[in-house]
Length: 371
Image (tube, rainbow, N blue to C red):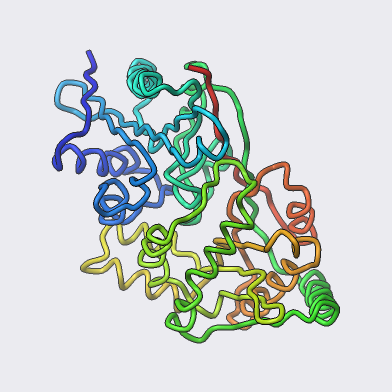
């Protein structure tokens, strides 16, 4: 017999955060998040997203053993923006037992329905930089820290519980061959001259941090029409900056200006996936060492985030950004890049990736269900 308990104490929150460390203990592809970061994300006083979100967490127990967890989120800003009554499921993890997943989904769906929601979708997080999608292809590939990993049986549980496909993201591994690299560089030079674009490079995190708010203000405009997106507030931007900017390598970031206005940006990062596995959720005593080592001696680069103002999206700004990062990669002796999730309907970007030697190796899905 299974029992579902709402997370209402610090002890229960700790169990919620640590459950995946037990579930994936023997899995060589799962990348553990930093435990303290998870605490910060799930506490209202530390995560400004709670100002616009209603949130509940539950754990499933078999006797005294934790066997699953689920989070339900109502993003009020999203519903207001879309005139909808959608709820989200998030951070869903469970053993391969349909009774467990059934009870977890039931308690989350019941709460969402009681709160006036008529539809549930997910897995989705607080915002579009939080966990998004369920991995349904690519279980034998290491995810980037901007992606997700799940167990193969999850999809079957979702579908048996009445969930259907809403959207898919696909991910690529790109290899920078000489022909494609030179072609991109030539294209970038043509675009720069045609539109008078200026490329801004960085030598330090301090230089880059000055652009934190302008970058996210651009992101808010560039991503507004994408699924699941809500604008970042000033407090949310500060929280993201505190979490991510301290580990970014500024040499892999670029900004494009037009007449002193920021019109595009790209942030890539030396892959931290193996370092995060070695850290196993803790920065100290050795986690920070592994992360810094990965930043200084990268083998693969992860493409974290790209944004272009809508009025410049057809002007080739993204071509310049990608060519710039390619040059930086080659200067560091790196020829492989992991993309983040791209909606499978984004044919313009996908066609660009296919100019390179590539594999489309991962797919994650957002599911949807009427309540």
